[in-house]
Amino acid sequence: MRKRLRLNIQVVCEALLVLAVTLGILAYFSHKALHEEAVLDAEQTLEGTVQSIDNVLLGVEQSTGNIYYDLLEHLDDPDRMYTYSRELVASDPDIAGCAIAFKPGYYPGKNLFMAYVRRKTSPNGNQSELETLETFAERPYTEQAWYSEPMTTGYVGWIDPLKGINTESEPLVTFCLPFGDKTGQRVGVIAVDVSINRLSKIVLAAKPSEHAYCVLLARNGSYIVHPDKKKLSDPDMYSQKERGVDVTELEAAKAMLAGESGMREFRRGNDDWYVFFKPFERVNWEGRSSAELGWSVGVVYPEDDIFSIHDILLYLVLGIAVIGILLFFLLCSWMLRSKLQPLRQLSKSTQTIANGKYNEMMPYTERNDEIGLLQNRFEQMQLSLQSKVDELKNETTRLHQHGDMLRVAYDKTLETDDMKSSFLNYMTNQMASSAESIDNSVTTLCNSYHDISQQEVGRQVDNIQRKGQTIVELLNYISHYAETNTGKEADHD
Image (cartoon, rainbow, N blue to C red; front, side):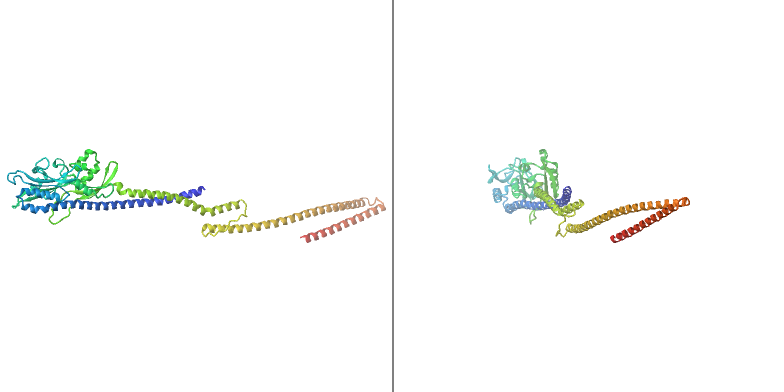
């Protein structure tokens, strides 16, 4: 039992080793494949995000270009500037406001002139009504970047987001288009605002995964797109240090601002996150400004969104593996028990034979494997051994019978020998008595021949003859007895 259990454990341990190596290789390559798939999905998401944002920006640029050339023909009509602004805001729902600002003193009697129309934000957050204003923010427009930079450098394009005191109610990203009079001198700027909140909603509507989101960083480090509205109001990302943001997240943002492309891992709270990023590149169209924005777009994934399915599958595979190992253990136990049954029977038979019981035969089996061959060979050995044992028993019986016969013959021989001894002793005693009598008579005759009478001499001689005859007869009898017994022994043999 212990040996079978030890064998089962050994087989299961070997299977566990193979399974562990297989699962390790599977986990490594599946993790690698998921990472590559996440990179591919991130690249596609980045492309889609760039495309979505660029579509909004391009639509604003085209809408601005639609009024540009007509505006140049009516620069002398200040009231018409309000019409252009209103129509431009009304024509595109992505536009939050439009300002057409002229250089100081362009119109006689007006030091500063700006036609500014914006969408009025209702209490429920919807921007529906349009309102006309004379000013923008708390400072004169000549001191604001959206006007001063294009007027000074002739820059055509999008500037860094306007936040805080540089805007009125919400953060904005602004497209600036300077224009000039017929002499080519710059006289004003068309500034078209897009709400960062609205731009974020447009981009974030298509979520790459359950908890993932997209971000867009401006050149100055401020957020243009982010799901957290508080961060959209921050002047730049470095203000997050005060909120305890992990340094790895700031390093990832710095890499984005540096114009790099790639992937960074960072910590947020107790979770690991991945950000895939690249520079924001606009589509080149004929007549479109080729100025680089210096923006960077990224898609942020929590680690669970990338590898959660992989982890679930891994746990599922591990659970199935554990159940499979248990079933494998039971199957091995059953198979080993079944396969070792003939061996146990062989062991039992050998022990029975060792105990001297040769009649219990091993049954014949139809198995063609080594155990079956061994069992059948063992059966043949048992049959052969049984035959030899039977022969040995028969020979032992015959030997016993022969021994009994020899014992009887021996007893008879001993009896005969005793009779012979008794006979010979008797005969010897008789012969000794006669010989002694003859000896006495001879001695008497020899020593007293002259002193005894003739009658005594005759009597002694007669005694010698009579005793001699007796000895002769005894010798004849002994000779006849010996010849008779010798013939009997010869016949018996």
